[in-house]
Length: 326
Image (cartoon, rainbow, N blue to C red; front, side, top):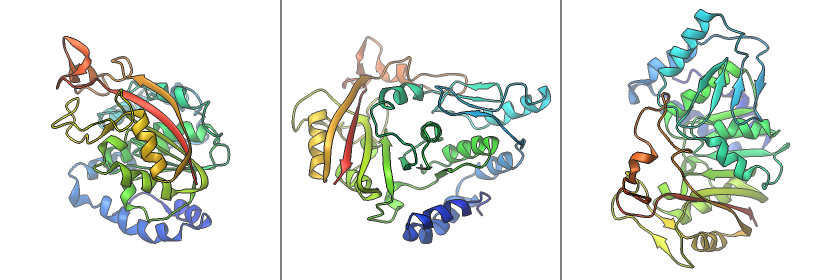
């Protein structure tokens, strides 16, 4: 049972000529929100239902901390109740957020990544944007704050989707949506979006080529892809394929060099491919907080050599590459 109203999204997708996706989505959403498939889902949906609803909520979406609601807009009791509700959705991984004066210090300083790319991409004003593997939608809000016409995020993890829905309900109606689906569930040859982001996804895919082709199929002709992923130092053809875990993650398959990745993208039909940034991830950018109390990056690195993971592999380094569909 889906308690979230997606009809406005259906209407917008029809305007985009994405009829094939509109036909698929109701069944996909019904399956994702099947209460029998996730033990915490009824509790989360009840939490969402009981959130305070306030008119004329102020929001600041173009700042490092996504801010929704003024700190003095809620009584102390309502604010304490809201903070408890937000903490019940632990862990919070993407952010930071300020919700009615409640600061959510997330595991990732996702604003740092946004700072690296925001001035180098095609302006998002009036663009239709897809964010693949969007987590709880932090970057989706930043895209909306950059005047995107509509932002659609997709992420198969229900906790991420519920966290987004909580923030969206506090914010109020807006052309921003997060769906509990993976990119492989989108219809082929969609070609509906002006800009597509894939950040922190490629290395989790068993077939990076298939992922690149799926991203290309989501873009209109001439549209822009922003791809961010783990890479290694090296030249053409060099790829790290971890034999076991990488930084304690089970599902890391391919870490290419930048030159290799750009060659893959060219092979998949992308043009105007350019390397924007390469940054080693630090324990200041990814860390445990009171809002994400599990192990984080410092626990995944070699205690005696932070240039290596605890498995003895090169420590996480991330590249941002921008390209266009042909």
